Length: 211
Image 1 (cartoon, rainbow, N blue to C red):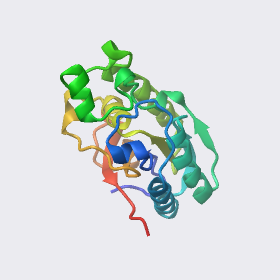
Image 2 (image 1 turned 45 degrees about the vertical axis):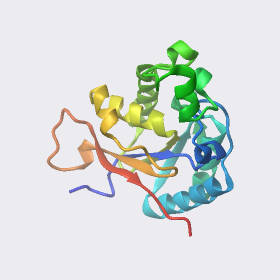
Image 3 (image 1 turned 90 degrees about the horizontal axis):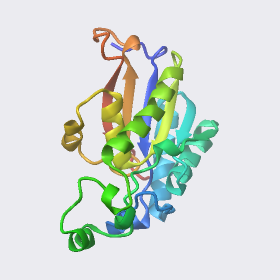
Image 4 (image 1 turned 30 degrees about the vertical axis):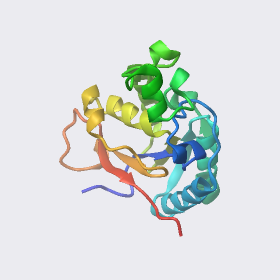
C-alpha cells in the first residue's frame, strides 16, 4: 500500500502528436511543432495530471513539441518548466524526415543504431536520459510529483536504464501513445518492496481522452 501523502513520484509524459507522427515520419531531434490534435491531447493530459496528482515540478526536453506539451501542464498546475536537453529524442541522423518504407529503401533494414548515419546509438540515449531522470529522482522530496515531458523512444530506453533493466527488455515494452505517461514510484513510500529496487514502474501508458 502506498502512502499517497508522502509518495515520491515521477511521471514521464510523451508529447502530443505532430504532423510527422501522423505521417509515420521519424522525427528524432528535428524540431517539429504539435499538430492541432496534439494540442488537444496535451490539454487533456495536463488536466488529468493536474486533477489526479499534486504536481510540484515540471522538467521537459527542450524540443518544441515537448515544450508545447509541457506548457499545458504548467498552465494547469501553476508550475514553471525547467528544460533539460538530455531528455531529447534519439538523433536519427539521415533517417529524420523519412518513413519506415523510405528508411528500408535507403538503408536496406531498420538500423539497430543511428550512429553510422550521423545519429546516436540507443545506449547513448539511454545513458543521457537515465542520468537526467536520476537527477530528478535524487531531488524528489516526500509528497512531491515531478512531471518529465519527453519523447516515446527516449522514455522507453531511459526508463529501462534508470530502473536497471537489461536493454533487451525495451523491446518488450509497447510504444507509448502520444500524451500517455508512465508513473515511477519511489520504494520508500510503499510497503513490501525490496530495498535494492529504489524505484518501481507503477503504471504504464496511462492516457486521457480528448473531450
